[in-house]
Length: 328
Image (cartoon, rainbow, N blue to C red; front, top):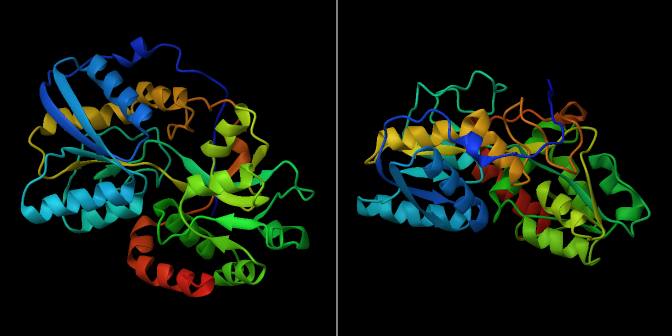
């Protein structure tokens, strides 16, 4: 069954509010993250304001590269990372299966919808980043559903990120295949209709905003932000529903400062921490926090069900099938 998510317009009025009652934690903490640099710095600064006894440094790169770095360090028997904040839950499920994540059983997730966080409390969603349809405003056909990308007006005009290079795209593919009646037949029809798949979400934004393609599957905040800057793009939440990534945070089992690491997780999933996500222009995962400017009301967005553990088990087969369909 599809579930719905709530939202309203709002700002994180004051980061002073983020400095709620702080635990007596101190020392150093190292964050490995795929957040954009500005967002990562804001997250770290806000946390240190709330917990002035902790000094946080961060290492930032794309999820694929940050995971390659972490895996190399784990293979060598040591890593500086205490906390991991990356794009997708499937990667977190892989780490969980190898007992590389520390559970945080005391984390308060009572306000959140089921599925946003790991039921075993090893990883915790910090946002709801959906994938829907963006289109160039010069397009004559305005899509309202995934099926519209198969219309004649979209022939040869659709682009999407590849799950071979994008974790969000892998989750999106698994979600659509698992929820649309056509399953893999939908992607086969897209390929036959001239759709192209390559790279990540940033490249899709560039192609559609520049008019190279008229339609693209892309994460929500990119076209919504660019529209606000004057780009000729619009974003649609398709009527069948959208896929989501939750930019989860987790504590590595090897952390040298578990108290500070737990405090960091608690901060990000608290209502105050979710206000920070809102101020950065993201759709907060917390249902009681408002929505960024340019987003519709939460109740109008349908989120398709997604099983991260199943997606992990199916990842190799899904990427292989996608590559076969699009000749990658």
